[in-house]
Image (cartoon, rainbow, N blue to C red):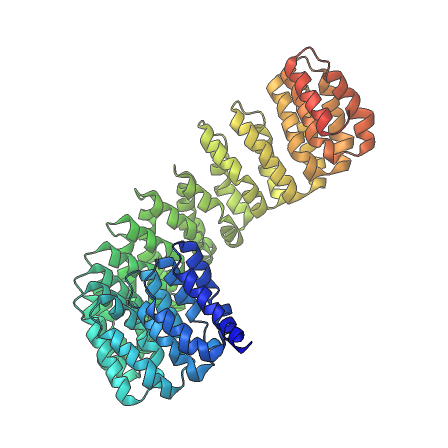
Length: 589
C-alpha cells in the first residue's frame, strides 16, 4: 500500500513531464497554465526540490509556453513555502530573463520585480542582487537589457556598498556597445533616479541623462526625453536651469523628428515638472517651434497639447502669452496642409475659449472655429461640432447661433450630398448640446427638409436622425413636433416622399411607444395600403411587419390582419410576397 502511495504522489509530476514533452504546443501551454494546481498537489517541499529544478532545466520551448511560465512563476511565492523560500524561484526566472523573445523577457522581469518585494533585505543581498549582477554582466545583450528593469526594485533595500555596485553597473549599461541595452537603460533612467539619493541624482544620473540624450541612436535619445520628466521633478528649482534645461533645449531641436515628437508628446508633463519661470522663458519658444515644425507628426502632437499647455501657464501672464505667442501659431495650423494636424487642433481648440474668456473668444477664436467648420476634412468638422458645448458656456447660445449656426446651415444645404450627410450625422450631438427649445427654433426645419432630399442616402440618414432625436427629447416632443409633419407627407404627390413617411414610422414606432403608434401612425399606414404605386403598397406590408410588435393584439387582429390579407391577394408579385411574409412573422395566419 505504501508503495502504491509513493507512486500516486509521483503522478502529478509524471503527467507534467509527459505533457511538457508532448509535440502539441497547446497541450504544453495548458499544462504550464495548470502549474499552480500541480504545485499544490506536490506540496511546498517537492515543488522546491523537484518541480522548480525540472522547469529550470527544460526551458527550451515555444515563446508562448515560456511567456505563460514566466507569468505563473510570479505568483508562486506561497506555493514554494512563502517569503523565506522565495529565492528558489530565481533560477528559472533568471533563465527566462535571458531568452531572445522580448515579450518573454519582459514578463520574466515583471515577475522578478514582483517577487523582489517578498525577499527580506538579507535574502535580497544574498540571492537577488547577485542575480541582477549576473544579468548586468551577461555576454548576451538580452540579459543586460533585462537587468536594467531590476536595479530600481532592489536599490532602496540594500547596504550602501551594494548600492555603490548597483550604481556602477547601471552606469556601465548606459554606455553599453549595444543600442538595445542603452535603450533599455534610458527607458529605466527616470525610474532609477526616483529611488536614488538626491546627491547621486546630481552626480550620477545627470551625466548619464546628458550622455543618453545625445546618443547616436534616436531611439535612445527619445527615451531620455521621457526620463527628463522624472528627473526634473526630483531636482530643486535652482538646479534645473543648469542641469536639465540645456539637454531639453537640445532635444526640442533634435535633428530626428521622433525625438522632437517625444518632446511634444510629453510637453504638459515637462511643463509641470520645470515650473512657471522656466516655462515662460524656455518652454514657450520651444512650444512655438514645435507648432511650426516641418514634420506633420510633430505639429499634430504639439497641437494636441495646446489646451493643456495654455491651462498650465502661470495665471498672471497666461492671457498675454497665449495672445502674443501661441495664438499666431494656432491660426497658421487652422489652415495646415495635413489633415491630422488640423484634426488634432480641432479636438482641443474649443477649450481655449474657457481660458481666454468671452471677448477674446468672439474676436479671435470664433473666426478660427468657423474656418474649421468649413474644412473639407470631415474629422475636423466633427471635432469642432462635438466640442461646441464649452464655447456655448463662455459666449452663450445667442452669440453662438449668430456666428456658427449659419455655417452649419450652409453645410446642411451643401451641393455635395456627402457634406450634407456628415452634418446629419452630427445633428443628434448638436441637438443634445443646444437643447430642445433652441433646436425647435433653428434646426427642426432643416431636419424635416432632409426627409425630402433627392438623394436616398440623405433621406435614410434623416430618418435615422429623427429616431435619435426622439430618443433624446422624448415621445411627447415627437408627438407635438415630428409626428404631424411626418404623417403630412403621406399625401405628397411624389411617391418617394410617401415612402419616406413609412420609413420614418418604422424608425419612430419603438421610440414613440404603443399609444402614439396605434392612434396616430397606424391609421396612416393602413390608408396607404390603397396607394396606386406598388412600391408604396409593399412598403406598407413591410411597415406593418415592423410596427406589429409595438401594437396590441386587438389592433393587430381587427385592423392589421384584414389589410395584410387584402395585400396578399394583390396583383403585384412583390406586394403579395411581403404581405405573406408579414402575416407569417406576426403569426396572423
